[in-house]
Image 1 (cartoon, rainbow, N blue to C red):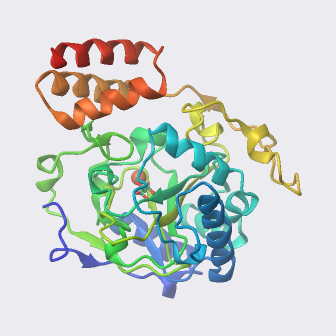
Image 2: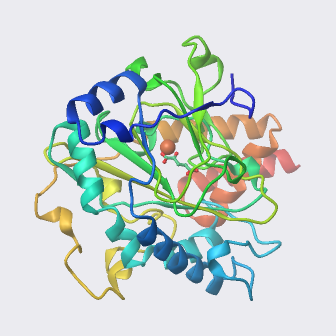
Length: 350
Ligand SMILES: O=C(O)CCC(=O)C(=O)O
Ligand SMILES: [Fe+2]
C-alpha cells in the first residue's frame, strides 16, 4: 500500500546501539535502515540552515523581510530539480562550504564505518533538497537509490533534515526490510524528483510496512542502495523543506562517474572550481582524488527507459509525461532527447 498518514508506522530508533558496530550491522541487515535521533550536531545544522536559506532568500525563494530560519517560501515561486530556474539558485546553495564539510563530520564517518565495518568515504556529489510547499506532483516518488547513484548495493545514503521536519513538511519514509529483495526492481517514468518510480504492485507482495517519523534537526536516517523509500508530500501552507542526502562508500569500491561531479552539473555548466570559488580552506577540495577511487561509467539504462516511457505516455495523452518532455526541451533544446520530445509534443498538439 502507498503510505497514507494512517498506515505509517514510527521508525525504530537505534541510538542505544550507536557504539556497537556488530549490533548496527545486524539491525541494518534486518530492517534495511538505521535511524538515529540527534546524530548530527543541531547547532552546526542550524547554522547551515541559516546560511542556505539566506542564499535562497537572495535568490528570491524565501519571502523578503522574513527570518530565513523560518523557511517561509516566497508566494508564487515553485520549481524543482529538472527546471532551469531551480538550478540557478541551487548552484548558489551548492557553493556553500559548510554544506560540503557537514558530510565529513567525525560522527558521520565513524557511524558509516561502524555500520559497514569498512573504511568509508563521502561521495563527492553531495545533495541538498529544497522543497517548495504544495508542489506535491513533483514529490520524490517510491524508488531505490541504486538507479540514480549506482556504484554498489552497499553504498549508504544518509538523509537528514536541516531544520525540524514534521510529517506535513514531507520527510522520508522507508519500506522496512525492503533491501532484502536483493535486486533493483523495475522503475517507471514519474514526474517526481529523479523521474523514476516503482509501481505499488511490484513491492506489495513483499507485505512490508512503511515507516517515518516527525524528524527533528540532527536526526539522521541511513540506508543502503536497495531499500525502497520515498518522500512524503510537503503539504504545509508556506514552508520550504530543506534536507541533505549524502552518500558514503567503501574506499576500495568503484564509484559511478557522475557521482564525482557536483549535483545537477548536467543541468548547467557548473563544476568544482565554481563550487570552491569562495571557500576559505582547501582541506576538502578534491579530497577523493587522493585515495584514487576507481571510476566506472554511468549506466544510462534506467533513465533511458524512463524517458522512453515518458514518450509513449505523452503520445497517449498523459499530461505529466508531456510536462516532463517540455521540461527536457527547455533545459537542453539541442540534445537528442529534446529533438525527440519536440517531435512528440508537436504530434500531440496538432
Ligand atoms: O529528500 C527527498 O525528497 C529525496 C531523498 C531521497 O530519495 C534520498 O535521500 O535518497
Ligand atoms: Fe532516494
